[in-house]
Image 1 (cartoon, rainbow over the protein chains, first blue to last red):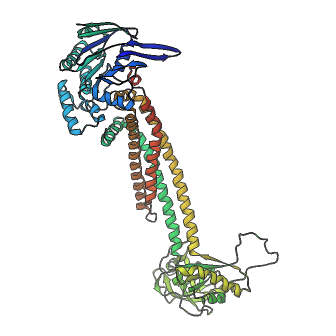
Image 2 (image 1 turned 90 degrees about the vertical axis):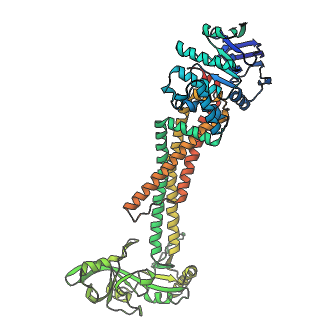
Image 3 (image 1 turned 135 degrees about the vertical axis):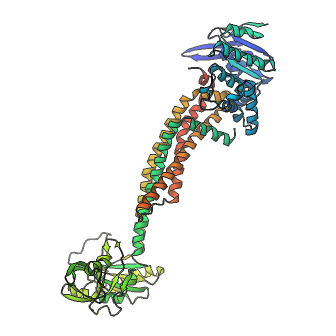
Length: 221
Length: 401
């Protein structure tokens, strides 16, 4: 990222959520982004995940400039390279765990047989094979977030973006989720976590602190 | 995303919101069923009426005394009463090469009695040819004998109801009946003909036309039924009839000729228009169902904002989101339409089973139109909600609320 600026119009005021950010993240890194509310960390995550586009500046993902891509192209990049994990899980309530995990593969147009194989593998990786045919309402919070992780990883993305992944979980299941995420990182996936939780943020090898839309601190363990 | 996957996703969305889907299906199917049933009804009425007319006879022309003019002009000041039609007129008409058969008709009403029983009967004075021209069926004996129409003879043919009421189980053939002060010998009984355009043939008694004129003391005819030689002869026959009668009536055109085809065509057109009108009114309910689809889909979009954001995050373009919502609406409309056709056709069959005279088989065009309109309105009205879903900003859609 070079000189990335993102402004929002709030009433008649222009808010600079990101104010000239320069940032390089290498493949396979484990990064936490922390900072007070309104510091721009969520905006940063949305930009990295191509859900949002910068007002100014340049963003390249895996060497490719993605700033100028149109809506369709950015959707394809999201589907192929990025996995999202949300604080609120965002599982589709009427679909079973397996169907939720299958969703990104279906959207990508992958054949059903291949989809089934990869869904089974992804659920196994998060230890939920026996919960495949439960709907989210029948699962605990920790299980739901693991289903969401399986969904985020089933496409084998290069980058995993987690926005307060343990924010809605108790300590024990939060711990489970963090371990699953760190296992994935250990196998080469780039993991970027936005969190309020200092303990969780402290586990990352690289810790970025944001204040007022700028990077205030960038520390490596 | 493949079409099959899109359909499956839409289907899961429908089964995921059962009450909403059931209500929508109900609204849509009522609309479709209304179109199907009402057009069936209209078509049934049309077939019934045109069938009645066709049953009157084949290549039939009817000559009526008097001229009905609707094309303006001052009415004649002096008494220009129409000349009566006479038996001689009828015989003259029969000489036209375009004409196969003629049957003059005089109608009156008088008391008919046999022994001690008596009742009022419609008396039809006519000739042997009436049997063929009017497609009458004789059950016992024979119809009026052939012969010179101007010769009276004391024979009668009874309608089925009259025969039953006057003779009961006894055989009326050869028996004497009285019409007014005259005696007639029964030579035949008609099979049950049923109601035909307001005249119940079962309650009529047929006697030779000359006898009826004597009975009612009139030289005139009620009308003359003419059967043209064939279908192509109907139009020339009409011209011939008018020409012959003009010559016979000192150059005045004082009769009206109705052809069966023109009446048939008129009724066919009127009833067809009526069917379309009724179908159009019923189609309004489909329009209403379309607006309901829009409402339901708008609610769905705001209920499923997070889901839409998620789909975008998982790699769905805004076009994909739009397609998913449109597919959902189209599927909803299609299922509603299929259900509606089933209800409409089923209802029609049920009514037909109870009332055999009424054939409520819906015309294919009505079924196709109902399903087509349902699909089109359902999908059109879903365009706005689907576009709204597609335009959602994924970041805002995913933001916790």
